[in-house]
Image 1 (cartoon, rainbow, N blue to C red):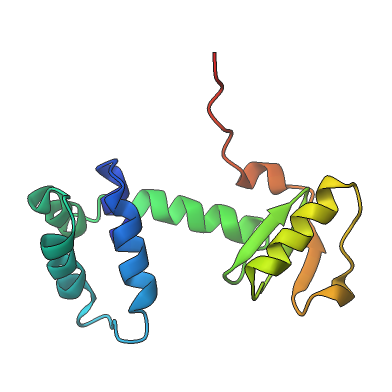
Image 2 (image 1 turned 180 degrees about the horizontal axis):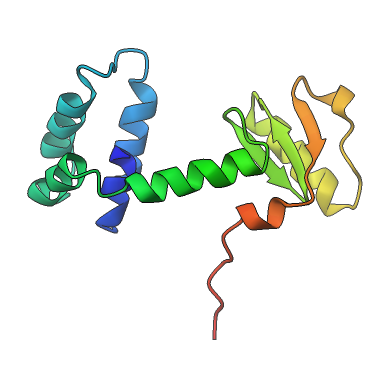
Length: 138
């Protein structure tokens, strides 16, 4: 929810908060999470600190996060990373090279055999519900 609070301010600092959470996930606990993130935001971002704290205190992004989680569960997402390419769910990818191989294979119309990757590969007919439409250009 904290990264979502950063995202509400519509600045590139969302990625700073995202990366901080990802890079420090082994040391962040339910007891220290809020304070460490608030301290990071105050020292390393241009986010409005008062607005950010208010968002956390009032759980302003709880609905957004809950909806995203429900949509993921509805489409079979059980782990990260999970990626959908042409209606096929790839779970547990270990490298960018694997993702590139999947995309290149899909671009040529070939399917990627599960044996090629040490990850779970399944078809998902409802994947379109999981993808936000891109903004249309005029």
